[in-house]
Each structure stands twice: as C-alpha cells, then as structure tokens.
Image (cartoon, rainbow over all chains, first blue to last red):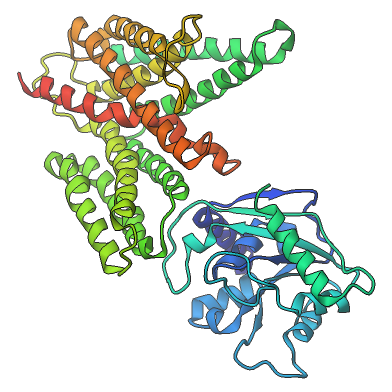
Amino acid sequence: MALKITGPLLALFAKFFSGASVRWIDCHPDTCQRIYFANHTSHLDALVIWASLPPEVRAMTRPVAAKDYWTAGRIREYFARHVFNAILIDRTEIKVHQSPVDVMIREIGDKYSLIVFPEGGRSPTGEVQEFKSGLYYLAKKRPELEAVPVYIDNMNRILPRGEVLPVPLLSRVIFGPPIWLEKDEPKADFLRRAREAVLRLKDL
Amino acid sequence: MTDPRTLILVLGVLVVLGAATAVAHVLRRRPETGLNPALLETFWRRIRAWWLLLSIVAATFLIHRVVTIAVFGLISFWALREFITLTPTRPGDHRALFWVFFVATPVQFVLVGLGWYTWFVSFIPIYAFLLISARIALADDPKRFLERTAKIQIGLLICVYCFSYAAALLSLPVDKVSSGAASLRERLLFFFVLMVQLSDVLQYAWAQLPWKHVLAPTISPSRTLEGLLGGVLSTSLVGSALYWATPFPYWLAGLMSGLIALIGFAGGLTMSAIKRDRGVQDYGTLVEGHGGVLDRIDSLCFAAPVFFHLSYAWLTSG
C-alpha cells in the first residue's frame, strides 16, 4: 500500500529536481520487455530515467544500480529495493559464475525491462565513454529484446561526482529508436553502433 | 473592504483580455484570413502569459499576500533554473549554486514578505554576492574565477533580486496616503504588471510599422526605435488614463508608465544579448515542454526595482 504512494511521489520528486523534459524519438513507451541503455554521468541517472517512464511502464522496469551507493543509508536502500526495484550490482566483487549480466538476465525473467549504463561507471568528464561489453552479452543472451538508446543531458551538473546535494537545473531525457544485435555481429561493432545510437540523440 | 477602483481595474482588464483572447481564438481557427501565422502564434502565447500573470496577481485580492509572494518566489526559482542551465558552470561552482538556489532565493522572498526594507534591498547585492565569490574560491578552482562568479551573480540579480521588487510592492508604506489606502498596494502591483505587459505588446505592435530602425540587429532584429518610441508614448498615455488606480497624479502615472516601458525595453534587450551569446532562441526552447519563464518576465525584472523605488520615494515624501 505504502508503495502505491511512495513510487509516484519519488517519481514526481525526481522529475521536479531534474526538471527533465522527456522526448521519445521514433520510439514509443511500451510495457514490452526492453533494455534501455543510457550514458552515465550521475547517481541520479537511473532514478531519472525510471521516473521519466509512464507509470505502467515504470512498474515493469528495473534500473541496474551500484550496490555500494544505493545501500549506503536506510532511506536510499529502501528506495532502491522497494520503490524503484533496482537490480543492485556489487562492483567490488564480480565473480566469474555470478557475473552481473547473469544476475540481470535472471532478475528480469520474461517480464521486466532493464535500465543499464554500458559505460560501466559515471563519466568523469560528462562525455560518453567507450561502452563495456556487458550490453553485448545481454543482447547476445536475449537477442529478441529491443535495445532502446537513451541520452540523458545535464545530470552531471545537477548531481556531479562526489557531491551529495543536487542543484535543481533543467535536464533532458531522450529515448531513441531501438536497435538489435545483428546475426554474427562482432562485439566491437555492436558496441560502437550502440554508443553512436546514444550520441546521435544528443543533437536531436 | 476592497476599494471599488480595484474592482473596476480588474474587471476592465478581464474584459479587454477576454476580448483579445476571443479575437485570437477566432483568428487561429481561420487560416484563410491571410495573417502571418508566426505573428498570430506570438500573439497567442503572449495572451496566455497575460492570463497567467494577471491571475496570479489577482489572486492576491482573493487569498492572501503571502500566497502571492510565495508564487512570485516560485517563478523566480524557475527563472533562475533556466538561467543557470543555460550558463556554463564548472564543478567547482556546485556548492555555490546550492546556496544560491536553496538559501539566497528563499531568504530574499522571506525578507520581502516581512517587508524588512533595509534587508531585502541589501541582502543579495552585498551578502549573497560576497558569499558566492567566497564559496567558489573555497572550491579551489581558479580557472576563470571572475567570469564564473559574475555569471552566477547576474543570474541571481536579475531572476531573483530584481524580480522580488515586484512582490515588494505589496509591502510599500501607504500610511501617508490620505484616501483609498485599502488594497492600494495590491492595486499598484496589478497596475505595474499590467503596464509592463502592455508595453511589451505595444512595442511589438509599433515595431510592425513600415519604418524600421533596428537598434541592435545582431542581438534583437525585432526591436526597433519606432517600437520603442511608440511603445513608451502609448504606454504613458494608457498609464495616465489609469492614474485613478494609483496614488499618483495623472502626469506622474503617465511618466512612470513611460519609464516602465523604457526600462522594460532595456531588460528585454539585455536578456536577448545573453540568449544570443548562448546561441538559443528562447529560454523556453532550451528545454521542450517548459514555458520559458524567463522569456516572459525579462522586462518585468528590469522595471520592477525602478518602479518600486520611485513609488517608495513618492509615498514617503509626504
């Protein structure tokens, strides 16, 4: 019951603080299973993308977030685990047979969509870094899922690295046309294509 | 309790605005009239902004002045948001910005609400400005220090300090006014907002004349000398005709209205310069779906302190 209130409240709060204007370009909000992949500059990114989705899509979408950040403090952990239902990845101990990709695949089952940040961490400069291979392995294991590029602008100024308190500037969240892993597409090619799909949204 | 003049003023504005809305509505539905659609769209957007601003001000008659001041504070906050979003800052400015948004802005409006004259006129240009420069220095990033400090300061000055003067009209001393003091301050605020908006529209209308001497073509191709002169003169005329709503004699009401138009022009031009420097058309287009609050209040921000101080001087000189 409490979740029915805290969820929309948190989304509203995130939307106010990020002042996010949301655009969908050649893509529509849908509850079908998807992998949203976005550039990463701030701890708020996952929350803001999650909040930008319509409520019914939001309920089916789980952001992947850093365990160390989102379990530091009870409130954060409550929000991460119960409100936006994050998949928390332990960045400090990544095991071979417990790889983050396996955890994600297991957690989403055939129901949930994912929000991932293929750069693997927040960009120190705000520029989009090279993508790590996680996105490729996700796409390889679930090739039927739509991979939706998301560009998120200005969040690094709202909550930069190392800061605790956000400054309420305005930001943009842009969802772009989905891509799929082509048959026999090499890893490097796919990752480059995915990164360009995100970068292209920047100037639209 | 409410003075009949207040009612007449508000009702008069409602009638005029209602008529303008009806005309705009009809014209928008009929593309065959051959009117420039971009011009119509501008007209329509302005009318919408009028409704919003005037209903906020009118709310003060109905609810409480605290509500009006709080709403002005929120508008200020949003305008500052747009301004800083557009202004490049460095990570070292983050903490200073936090103070600006969450301390300086609310405190300014609390001081205005309390009517502590000495404090609300000095708080931002002295204390907040010094705090900003010191907080940026503390962040230990000397790169373009003066430029960064100045950017944040002018944002705070225009969006918060100057804008708060409009709300401050509600705390003018009126005890020396012999007759009709009831709701005089609210009426004065209403009159001020009306004159600012009116001068915007009149300048725009006069600038459509065939004679065009564009004053600063690079910065604002639509602002002409003819628009300025016509706007100032016609606003003065309307202002002096409405002198009964103010504590001023007709000549002073006209003079102050003309001054509002002149300074409002300067405000619009200044904000255009900032926008051109940042390479955007409107603060609103920067982020789709947001109104572009700063585009609507630029002239008001510049005119408010001048109108306040002149009114203050007149009301206290006995």
